[in-house]
Image 1 (spheres, rainbow, N blue to C red):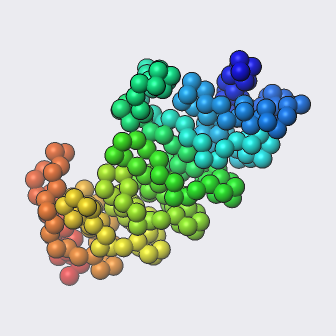
Image 2 (cartoon, rainbow, N blue to C red):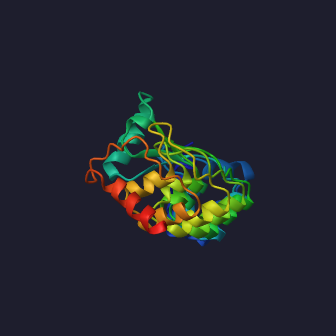
Image 3 (cartoon, helix red, strand yellow):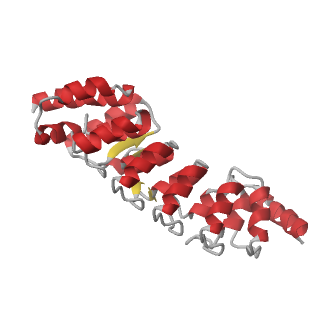
Length: 264
């Protein structure tokens, strides 16, 4: 057990440094079972070699973990936007079995494909999909759950979105905090155009408030997207007002009215 822990930590460093040579020497002369145990060991109960490789390493390193080490393509790691202190807190919580990940702010249990889509690693996304990764797997914590394509849309990763849709990603599903892919893509009209061409429903509405992608884009004052949605048949009928503290009152309605007037 101790040897597996030590070797898994070394493999994780190799993944972060994209050092395939050392990783291969590390696994040399080890049985398939030993390789899998090392590759699938969650370091500190937080990180995995494949998730780190999905973010930092080359496609060759990812393929090495999958093809030669038997890494679990759906094994979850914990992703945070927080500090090292937050990550250590998560690790302690899991070790004590006192709580769940969702009780720590900004901590998400994520699969490698979700991570690769989030950071726009198109080459890694292609590799993971080719090896059978679930393109519609939900990741996240608490009330926030999302798919890889939703996260790619949120970061305006057009090529990644296109690849995931071509692999069967569901773009109609409500994710995040009650949003569709079309809604979360509001700041990038090119991504929205792709989604609409691939069948995204213009009239899909949030469960709370009944807001459509057009309402969401207008609220954020994304005028290019508002115009696009109107041109494609979006309904400008007002919905229940948003409760946004970040935007001046009426801004969304003003943007919608201006765009609708220009459209007419």
